[in-house]
Length: 600
Image 1: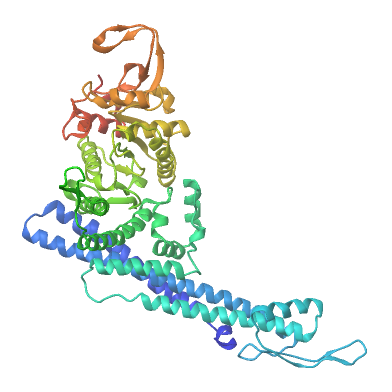
Image 2 (image 1 turned 90 degrees about the horizontal axis):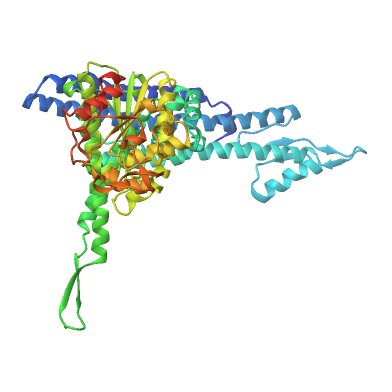
């Protein structure tokens, strides 16, 4: 890099080229949405048979190409913007130094050397000969810069300017080299098939680009620990191209930000899902090829016979295999929900959250909640995780259809697997710690929905909490006011409060589903119900009891609220059975038709 090249560099040419690539990014994003909404959805709704299946396969291939194009061209767009911004900064430093040299009358050659005249002493003698200062570095650089403050002669001033010019040229050279290397990595295979290998390559490209593109979409600027309103304000302040760069370089971070628009989070999380799916499949394939011996053999000292036991190595291997296979099962369930769009008028699905950390998390919406008149958020209970997401997703698609049967449009139902749930009845489900950790996550998500929707009055929102999920919601209500209008709990083991009014949204907006034969409220009450002293009451088999303490849970009349009719006799998970009064009751609350709820 020379002085003239950097001085005369047209960074606007780079930004114009970046704008061309941004057009390709938008084409990919809009193309996928068009195929999903305008082509695949009507096809699934109206046609069946081999021809329809073949057409769906080819259209899905086009949608995959659009998404892959969006991801890869987004990295090129971000790289060109980053290159332009970093070179512009180096150019600005150079121009400042050149202007200062010109003010002093110092000539500057193309290599960055600065000429200076002789310096005269007070008596007119030559204190310092004329000469040329060349860019220096390291200790000499700092020493000469310091001399310019103590002995402000022409030589010291010229040396300082030469160092500044040299640093600007070196920064521009390093920047150019780094971005050239990054752009060389962004080369895709030709062909219409988008394979797992291509998605893995895309993941490698994303990692490389995120660490090497420094001039735009700075990861440190992404809000951390901010409120949903602060997240939304930060995002809205970015330009369209900056938003596109953040989505391309940091999809995992952007996809988690509560308060951002649903379409933004969906775009980010779909990219994460695609690359994670490819990574997990590769890891599982490698793991299966390296299965260790299952059994270890030892000789019993007492009886002198060989004893066979499962080896520790195989047990560890199998635990990892089950985790990977389970997470891929969860991803398959999400992809299956995407593929269901259009069936029986089912709306487009949006992925509001996704990661494979721990047991994995996913947040899937039926319809866009940002524009919905009625929104329902489902919080599942014990054993919920990414690998078990199929059933939780299905419950909310069934609820969406139940709301449609009531003739109400503008409904969005959301499955929120956004916290680490207990994975065992004993001992984990008896612990309050899972709810205490999950409650702030739920509050942030629910508040983020309100922010993205435009305020508390923009949509009627209901949270539906099953089993331990109701404990999460109960704890959340004690941390801050819930950003919901109604609460439905099903099979609740307790909400850590002893009355519906304590949930903070009004007793009349609290609804409970439960069956005398569902064992969870009875078994969970000691751990999560709020204990209350009672002088007299009923004990086992209806026998009277004297003064005693007992835990209060939502299925009890003393808890207050509305107790809805239920057909889930003896089945803790039967509250979403198709055609049941339970499902219809939930739909009536979700759409605000309280007078159509069947109460006990």
